[in-house]
Length: 135
Ligand code: THU
Image (tube, rainbow, N blue to C red):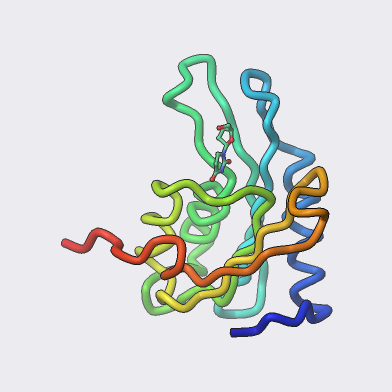
């Protein structure tokens, strides 16, 4: 596992933090940003988008995934290389990621407001979701 924060990882962490700035979170006031490094080297960003009907809220990670699928750049055959996100991904988002990503995809977490002393934490997708649902 890559545990050193390379310039590429640092850049992707910055992209997630920038994406959090555009979050629409008037209910929770908890802004989240995600940046997904795609197979072709491009980056798909997402932020959480809340709704007055709370269950209609979509997390930042899924916005990034769905935007990449809609752009024709993400599929099981075009697995993403890495995810950075400003909060620990929820299980629903991990399941959505597992549809397209390999179990050993790195996930870097960087708190928006200096969570973990501002020190990014890294995991693999399979660390956070060891038993993804499969049909
Ligand atoms: N949220 C995300 O965007 N990603 C996660 O993985 C966890 C939760 C959002 C959803 C909601 O807008 C806010 O954080 C509070 O739950």
